[in-house]
Length: 124
Image (cartoon, rainbow, N blue to C red; front, side):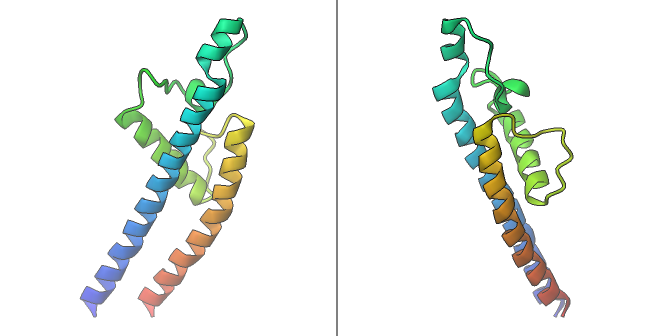
């Protein structure tokens, strides 16, 4: 019985980590697409102010911090968004990011319900 409990608990933890990671990487792809379409290069050529995107606002530039730092920031952001805690230290900055995060928040409620169902099953 203890082994079954432990395995189910590990399964739930792995699901949480995978969902947060996939959301973080999807958000990273969205940020890269935004940088390609509306990025610094396009605005600097026209002499306009830099756009306010997640990557620009938090200092994650494609040339610099797209490594482990960016992954930790994006996973932290996805975890706080999916759990609907939302501390506010990282938040979406552009309209595309807000729309994407709104869809992910709805998805997060469904995932949270699934995870809570698994926890209840473990406790029973």
